[in-house]
Length: 528
Image 1 (tube, helix red, strand yellow):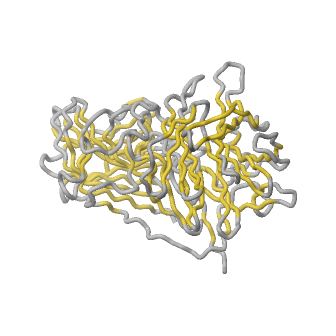
Image 2: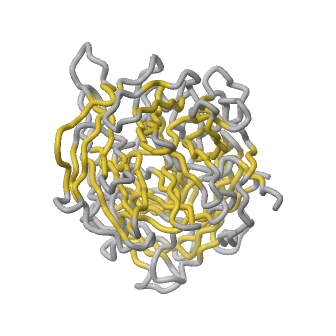
Image 3: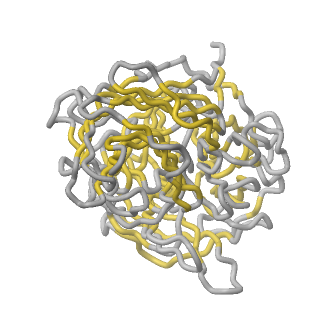
C-alpha cells in the first residue's frame, strides 16, 4: 500500500493545544476553544490525513459557564482519552489569567459516544492548568498537571504533579506527587503520560507558546519517578529557524495507530506578516519513532516540523468539503459556528422565528465579557472572503448590526449598520486596536430604509477590504484596504491565545433587544 501524504497544518486556523486519541480505527483531536462556545472542538479522521470538524463536547452552560471569563480565558488545553468503551475529557475553565494569580478550575466529563451526550462535569482541582488523564495498564488512572506558583521570586511554572483519580469516588485521591521540574527551556506545561515497553514517557511543552516553543520528553520505570530527561531534547521545535513555515511548534500529544505506527500532533503558527499569526495557533502532525535506546524522536532524525509527512499504512478516507454558504435553513447552528462565552439560546438567537433566516437580538457591546450577540466562524486561510445579507432597521445610534472580523474585545474590525440623526440609516466601519475605539475611519454612507443590505469582506493576508450593496445594486467599496495584523496572538506585547473569527453580530445598547435578520453567510477560501 502506498502511503498518503499529510499536508500541514491538518487543522488550519484557530485550533491550538491538540490532544489526540484513538478508539478502534477512528482518530479524534480535541482542541482549546478559550472563550468561544460550545467548548472543546473535536475533529475526526480515519487515516490521519483527512479531518473533519465533528462535534463539541461542552454544549451546556452547566458544563461550561464562561460569562465574565477574560479574553483568552475559558477552555485551556483539553485532554481527550479513551479507555474500555468510555471517552474521558479533561479541561480547564480559566477565570483569571493576568498578574500573579491564575484561577484554573479543572474538570472531567465522560461519554460513551464521542458525539455525546457528555456527562455533567466532575471537579478535580485548581492547582494549575493543562491537566491530562493517564490510564495505566493495571486499571489505575492518574491526573497530571502543571503546578502554578504565584509567589514572587519563585518559578511560576513550578513543575509537573501527579495524583490518582478514583472513578468510584468521582475525584482525586491520595497524595499530590511532584514528578518533574522541567529542563533549562523552562515554562514547563502541557504534560501527557504514555507507557511503552516498561517505560513511562512524560511529554511536556516548554519555552512558552510563542517562538521558543518546544516539545520535551522524559521517562521513568515508575510512574512516580524519578524521570530522566532525554539527551536529545527538544524532540520538536521551530526555535531559531524563522525560515520555517511552521513556527511555534510545541504542546504535543501522541497516538499509536491501529497499524502500530506513532504520530505526534502539535501546536504551530504561520506568520502572515513579520511575526504576526492572524490565523491563531493551528494543529500539525509529525511521524515519530523510538530510537534503539528507547527514546522518542521524530522520524528522519530531525526535530523541526515538516510541512509534508508520510501518512500511516491506512487506506485514504476523505470527507466531503463543507458548503461555503449557509442559508440558515436548519433549526440549529452547524458545527462551524461559535458564539462568545454563552450558548446560543432562543432568547437572543433564533433559526425558527423566521425560517431561512438567522435572527439575532441586540444585546451588549463588543467590549462585553458577558452577553454579546455574536455568531462567527474561524478564518482558516490567509486569503478568503465572507459575505452576508441583513435586514435591519435601527431606530437610533445605540443599535448596530453587521459583519465583524473579530479577535477579542480589544481588537476587531466591524462593518456595521446603524442610525445617525442626520444621515438616518447608514453603514460604516468601526475599528478597535488594542482597546482604542475608532469610528471615523471612513464617512458613514446613507442607506435606504426598508431595503436589505449585503456586506462583504475580502482578506488578503494582513489586509481587509470591505464592501456593501443595498438591494440589487452593485458592490461598492467602503474605505480602502485596512491592516489587520493586530488581529493576532502576537499583538500587542501581552500574550493572547485565540485567532481571528469572521461573523455576524448585533448590539442594542439601550437594552430593548432590537433584532436583525441575516439571510445567509458565505465563506470562501482562495489559498491554494
